[in-house]
Length: 128
Image (cartoon, rainbow, N blue to C red; front, side):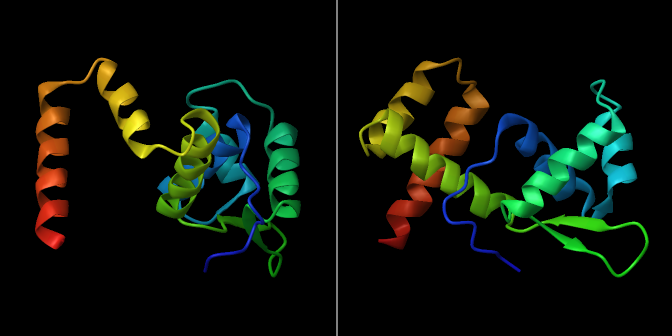
């Protein structure tokens, strides 16, 4: 269920935890900590505090019905990505989606990525 978070954008640390929750689904602090510990050194209490802050910001929801609280992302990965992209387009590219796409394509774009983009554009044209 999507929560209204009034345009609050996750920090880098919050986005890391959201990516874990999107991947594994609702989880306890211990589960999130075990997952993040596979790739970076982060303390349990740090993960707990970040999740608590994220709950205050409505980035996650918390099930308090059991002793170990279970956290879940308040919004889907796609909703959050769309919000972040809209914000980036507005702030960094003057509202121009084409400037964002052209800049992204100027980075190292593989032939596979170009083929995927071409297919997406063809599909979008068919919808019109």
